[in-house]
Amino acid sequence: MAKVSLLGATGRTGRPLLDLLLEKGHEVRVLVRSEKHGLPDHPHLTVIKGDATDADNLERVIEGTTAVFSCLGTDQKQILSVAVPNLIIKMKEQQIERIVFVGTAGILDASEEPGKYRFQSSESRRRSTIAAEDHLKAYLTLKDADVDYTIICPTQLVEEDAIEDVLIESNRFTHETGPIPRINVARFAYEVYDEGLFHRERVGIASRG
Image (cartoon, rainbow, N blue to C red; front, side, top):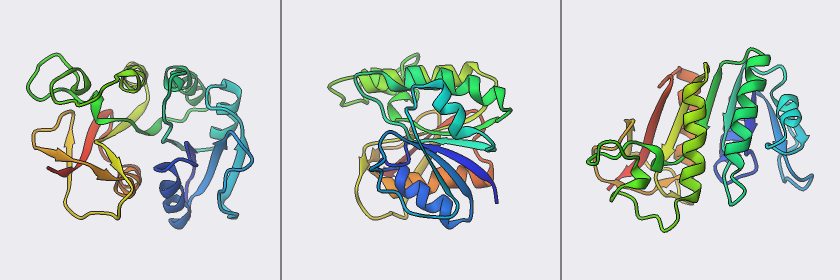
């Protein structure tokens, strides 16, 4: 099996993805801010303490891996705007081409307002666009880089059991959408990697509205 790295492994989407990667037999390297990370004691798991905004820490976690997964969130510090450019540099230095990145549905194209992203259009119900803007910067950075990316763009994430009727569309949604369980997003991220799907694309995932 492959050796991969995962950023955001302690998050509510990253943790089920980590569990799935380990279940499938992969060796996984993760980067955590705190030693109190609550991750499993597993022979195929390597835990590195550090910060995703630090280029040297990113280099350490992706070292020797063949692909990168990111479930990094964002906040007022614009974490993605800092982390992603550094990550791309380190990936190129280590000749790692593949990255599966969990973003947000806000950076899909608006379905009825050409030239706008979803978060800029009437499709969005966001009060604040700060997080979407940070995800957009990450997408544009990946798009301009010579890396094999897939950006998974979920609608509202919910803590519910997995559903069967999942809507998946490239670049924009053309159907009504609803919230999506985090476990579905984690499973889809693994499927995208394992089956080699949606190269250099944004792909939306939602429940059917």
